[in-house]
Amino acid sequence: MASKIKVDQLETADGTGTIALQNQLSGMTSASMPTGSVIQVVNTVNATEVGTTSSTYTDTGTSLTITPTSTSSKILVISSNHISKETNDTWGNLRCYRDSTEIGGTIIMRRIARTGDSGRGSETASFTILDSPSSTSSLTYKIQMNSNENNATVKVNYGSGSSTLCLMEIKG
Image (cartoon, rainbow, N blue to C red; front, side, top):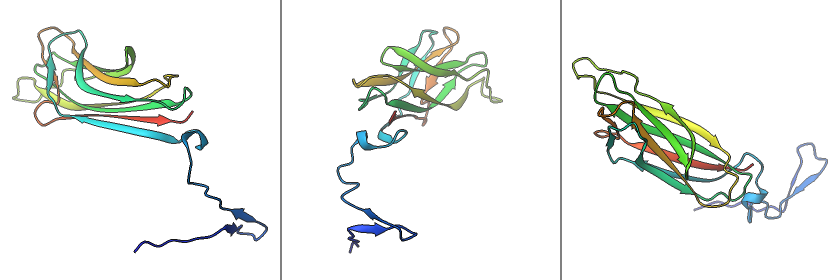
């Protein structure tokens, strides 16, 4: 059985006044929340393996859409990606786009090699970006990757790996 406390007002700790409680939380909107509050969160997990041998950036299949409630909002982008390479002299790059605008990324996989495995290596590459899109339109964030040299394979979500993308709207 759930418990419920009902009061009309609270007395201050020093007894000098009272605090009226008139549905302070019901009806709260994003507009009434303080600056820095998390207004909404969306998240996705992608386990589909995608590979490339091209130095041209290509979609990894990890993408997510959010519609900010205010033009002053910021979007906190948190991404974690499992990426692998096939040879010793290969590395891959990841970057993040908001629609057609690059907002950041990371260079990864520099010559990582495991003994006896012909240079294949894998790791998790993560990044966090605080974006200021100044928009209330629907925005799509996506992760792209490339190989540092043509014909050298770089993959995301190799084997049982997966990538995540989380978007948080922060009130500005």
